[in-house]
Image (cartoon, rainbow, N blue to C red):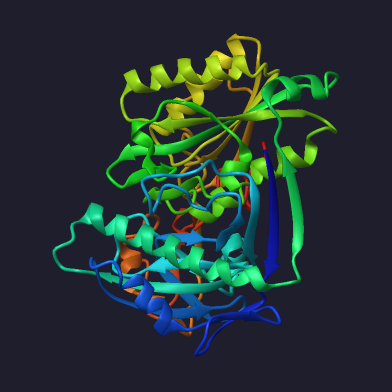
Length: 428
């Protein structure tokens, strides 16, 4: 399996009467894009706005962030979303519009959408502040319930991102990254002197607007499954959840998974990256114990000497993280976990809801309960009042002078658990 990822750098976005990419600027015809989104009869109205790095702009409530990607040849990006039949993702040529994103907002879907500021102290907490955002403000039809509302917003964002990425097909200036993924036997023999490392990729699959979609299908119907990192880059995984915005894995975070990027960087030098086991985070103990067994079995089948496990969400998903780590360590497989901490505003509370003695190598992405005062912005895209229902916000968040007092897990991507974050923690 070979994937060529062609990254077209987008340095600006502007509205125009046609859709094109010219001199690093993504020109968007909002009327044409509106017609595309209104093909879904469940959408009552849609409009678009632009947010650029450094501007005094706040986007809230943010539902999803998506990097525009489209397949030139070798299958399709975001397979399984818009058709019943699908090919395998992860091969051929894919174009990506790097430096920009389609970002969805509008009336809040759940209660855990978040905030992105394009300037001010928020930029120190999230990589999203560095992107040029085409913001989609979507309003559903009155008869659409909360769960279908999530579906409408999710599909609209992906549809727009895929459509805009096709504009790159005519571009002649791009950065190329080429990836090869060999069969397990070949990989096993490729670097016999290096430790074999597997990535256990936890993803939300809990219902109640806490879901991930794999090839367009709800992860709740999955069991732990071996996948390739190239599938992830091609949009086989997309976000459909409303977990804490700080730790939420948006579609952009799946596409640009920092753990995968780091494992590729070290492959053949320090480690032999053997593959990924995708582990859906379920709700009941019976499902958690089943998935622990199946995950550990597949890790062993891949011949792992070591494992890296990333988390998503907080609360009961920490149990999945810990029991898988425990089982792997007891099997002699060295395991490192990535998790955030919920240690209270003063940092003195118990930071994890579950733990095991075997979890002795932990990478922390910071205390999500720490607070930050964000300055007033000149412009808000969306509805600032929704901050009162955002996870990390409350009815006293909006100050009289327009400032915003927020726990950092109200900021989209602030303590991303795939490592795409600026936060961490040290032992003192």
